[in-house]
Length: 353
Image (cartoon, one colour):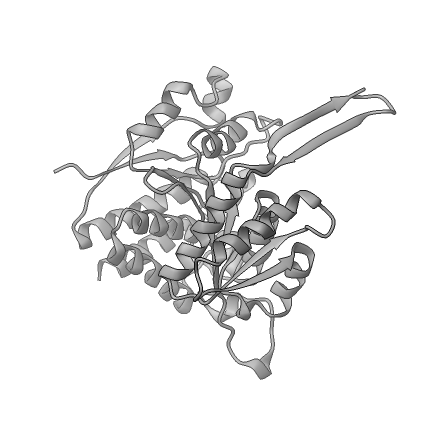
């Protein structure tokens, strides 16, 4: 019997190392829980681009659209490609071309020691909310251009794009997730007090939210929300926002729960193959030294198998990472002394038993 078809783009720098670590842990999970993964490795990376001048061809994009069940991507970025053309075409290109309009970033404190916010009087913090970032519109569409480039009178224009369809579908997705996961409040962030175009978000949020009477609607201007996330992250249950703000807020929130080395993400469109990626950088100076933190890639793999409906396996992967953190089985960035492979072996063993 064939298994889930997984396309792997390992990427650059530490990308291949952490993806291999995640695949080893996935293999342990698949054996324990009785499912199979048919893994197809694709070559697209800085090495491939430098050798061929090809980022990702149209045929590969079409294959990822129709021929796989999920896409697992490592970190992309290499100083030998200063314009990062390959990374832009692979990551942003696939998000747009596959219409993966949901960027889901879980923000979960897996161990109290990972939170930099210390308040002994308050006791251990409980931080657990997702950020739903609209992934195909906003300022990232690339509308605009430059005038008199390179002169003292240079002008650069970048235009935001927000459509009713685009805003409604991400807002509705966030409400549906909140309803399915027992959350009673959803926070929406915009900057409508300074950017009139953002008023569309407020209107849609109110209209769609009226269909979910069990979920309280909360609006915050994005600058105020950034402050509140630092002051009182525990009060948030779920956040939905536009592309740029989601990009920024999700990195800020990651800093509250351990940093990018432990932060997974998913790019989704219901009914289609999702793209799953750890959100840390490629860190070329660390490549090949067996020091890269594999937790973000392992947790990203957990998100992938959860979307593929292997729920027990996803739970086991997440539980094993929590156990590793509690046992101090971590890489140097988290204060540990273990290497990438050692952490992966420990987590795989925990998943197996």
